[in-house]
Image (cartoon, rainbow, N blue to C red; front, side):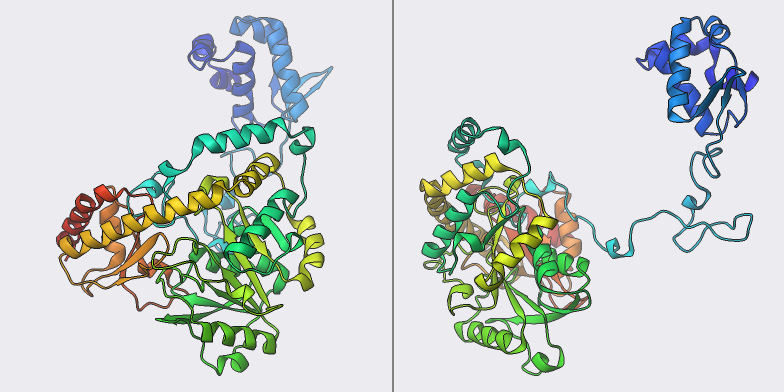
Length: 503
């Protein structure tokens, strides 16, 4: 009984229950369970009868009975005519409340009685090296790349379409949906892409995804096997690197120059890829456009060697020196190209909607495979998005954003030209939602970004976009889409002050 009283502390039991906002029955249940799991109440220990314990704690007997019954149902107690005793929960449970090996490293651990070392429960090796660099609040700070002008989105119009979609949707919208996406959204995307991007696509080739990241994961699993080689741009999009590595592919970084990705000719035979990931319209993050000659060469080599090209067209709608360029996918009939797009940049990130366009030759077969891998929902939002596109709101919104982003980009470049303390090359300003500012050798980009974050600014270091551990770049990736033009001068002055303090 002394161990039980140590666990329950009868003199203060009622006060402790009040302090925790618990009923006496719940407080008793929690205290007994904690004592058993921590090993303070040992297996086989007898507990007093319900009437006796109720009198000791100053509570109703029914509360004790119910607490005992709940613990017995969970397996913590054993009740019989002979009384109530603490159950044996197994080795490693009683005592510290955690398994012995959980305090050691993956290959460490203290030896058990039979000489074997217990393994520590830990994350997989494939997860090592991956972590989110910015939290959601920091992603809203000035100069964070990839964030559109959220305050310029027509939210009232969107709310109207969402309400309309809810009214016209039955209970079926609450169930799992077609894994390929809502038919009206697939049709709206196909129609838009044919007109705006020159993509050869029917609705049956369009597959709605939860963003570019999921599309990349599906591409890697659909089109390649573990151990296959994937070429990826250097520097390039970290999300592609993560998706391909997680699929078990071997990455071959391909350096980007002023005309886009440019693999050595000999690599096609020596390092033959299964997948080639590229951002031809606006290379991410440096910004060059893949020339027509290189596009045609990529398609020809991909056909010859039986590989797939993944064209990530993430922000091609926002071109500042002319109309958007036609997609690579539509430049050759039946090209071995999977076209990816996202609404995170053109609508808003929280929508979590993207798409991929598969070649007609594999679309039907892929539909069944995707159905087994990725059950689909979000019917109401997808139908609202379909209406947003079909009624012309999407095209009008893009037109307004092109003008807005062009003005913000000019304001940022002018502020850098006037207030940045060193001569710096600006890359990728002809399109998109960000630009790259080169830095002098003595000013590491990662150190500057960490210091800038402390001042409420969130540019990204260009070194973070390296692939395969290759360096060679030092600069800032600066988003301007979600930063008003009138704030560029004071923000650049703050960034310049931070940079001077580190130089």
